[in-house]
Image 1: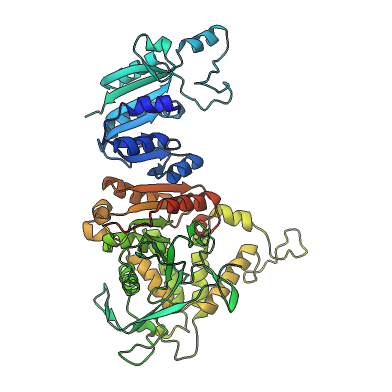
Image 2 (image 1 turned 90 degrees about the vertical axis):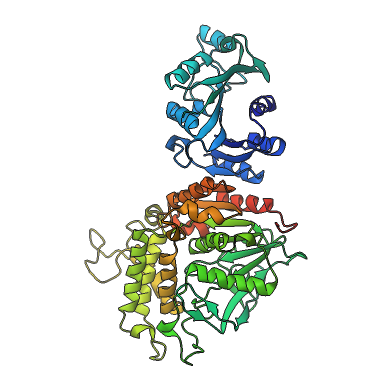
Length: 194
Length: 381
């Protein structure tokens, strides 16, 4: 995650929140939230190197496979549940979205928007996009769920999620005009499911 | 060659009340310490041992340089639990056969060797005995308490019995209680011992015999459960000890050692029966069976752990079926419910339960980095 993106996401998290960060990577976002916004909580991560990085920076991390669900966590037990660049790696992305809305009072999801114009341009030329945001070749990408800003709106509606904020992120800047075309990252904030 | 460790003993005259209602008096605890206790006594780490271990946690003895502590890969100068920074205490539990008062010692009430009359001791009793040792050292709060397997149960129990005395708990390859299957394995081991004609109801010392047959079987059963199917197949497979001249290589004997795994188990059993005490085996497996902090809370582990205050590191190993990752996850869940600070590492290792004593780099790195975060500058109020 770039520092720009980290700061943009952190700005969405109220100070003092209890946070669950699903697919927390090296723990840098949680560490930032702990140090600068007095947040508490846990990261969930599967990768050994990332788990170690979290421990080394003093972030509480739970080494669990998200594809096995969030059974460990009670309904609405966190103020904010984050899924930052996680959704695209999940086999059961829709289940995890519902679980995020069950466990969190608020859910925040961010993922690479495949409808960003450079990606569209690449497809028009007949090739899968390889960009700074999507640096992988089609044959070795870890992104097994490729979706767009507009696709997520449909999935959220299907699951009865109430979206309280939705925008694009490009170069660390919020994109409110035509985010599906103009932003490399899609960001959604939604309320937990009762 | 590791550093030189020096075993010590401390005598306690005052009776220790036990969970069973009995008490034990005039007892001795064997212990070792490594590193220096700092001025405000805030850098102490207590290591709790499992079934077949002792206070000799790290280092080697000057007169026995091959006798390395059982967690020497984990603890020492520059090791994951760095004795340049921490003052580490290893203590032998009551009822053991490695130095602290146990069934082979004289009962001050009768003047005779305890034998089977040694009182049943529990994890909670051990923790209270350990707390008295810390009292005598002037240590009011531990930087960390740490243990694997049964030792992990003691570490967990510390956080419940003396929550204000622990800043961190490191619980490795452990469980909040034993499953029925686990108790069953312990019972097979105990039956092997008590049905050995040399057991004499636990008073075999006076007869000048040792129930070695029972101890051997107990160890063989235990050893199987500490390994994984994968690692056994890798180490032994179906390899024969000595192939005879036939198509199959088999001896066609029901009693000879045929497969390498048989030879290995017999060797482990023989070795164990030479040094381990039969009554100690019964006592320690019972302590394992009885441990169940949720029991007093209607089986609700989250309620049981509500009193814990410290930060936790839990570690489990993927192929450990005796203390499986799901049991560690139960503890994680209960701690999360209580909003406790917890980190959980699930190490994908092939070695079964034994992995907690081995050199997996991810495991050692996780412990090292966790301890590097522990503040030794002052006690928590």
